[in-house]
Image (cartoon, rainbow, N blue to C red; front, side):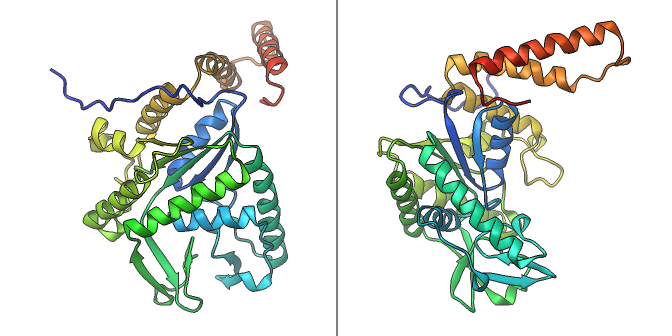
Length: 315
């Protein structure tokens, strides 16, 4: 008896991910999960320079600013709870010093411009259709930074608005890098602060909008949300907050992603990297024993051999 609905996934053959790929990740917190896995296996990645960006308008705005090399100045910042913030970035980017934040933002913009020009793949994870508009400037923000809610208007982006935003994201990325491959995915993280029904509406708008643009040759969709909702249809795959996928779910979706997008050679290299990572995490009973010293020597040889082929890999 089959008690699971399996989502059929086709292996990517035109533009798969290898250790020669350069991957730019943007979006909601699920992009952090995939990014962490790519980082663990030593792929070349650049991830969320402005921190987590939850909705398509924030991602579109970030990409536009990167391409046009926006220079942040004092008037672009806001002071709240003894810290300086940008409405374009997550609170983790914020700083207690105004000049430091400006320096960090502008450095991240310039670095991201270079990374996007060289990227082979962009993985963009959309989290929600809900947005907040700062009343004073009538601007949709990426993050409210715990500023009182009365200073914002909250609304749900329409499918058409999101579709236009996705179209702009594709156009902007293609303008700076004609060879870039864009992979869209929907975050399986549940935004239930708005309620279950509103979370469902939000995800449906995102899915509908993205699927308006999958006819483009360089645009693909990976069903991380659908895998969570159908193949992993059980609360045991969530963390205690019943909102975020747990480690088992993340690992499951990651393995599906690898099976779909990674070259066979990269899968072999991943096994080598994993063996080294596990070796580095090993804690011996006696660090000075001959057996452990021999183990470390062999581990160093493995690292050296891998680095001969992939000079960018560092442990």
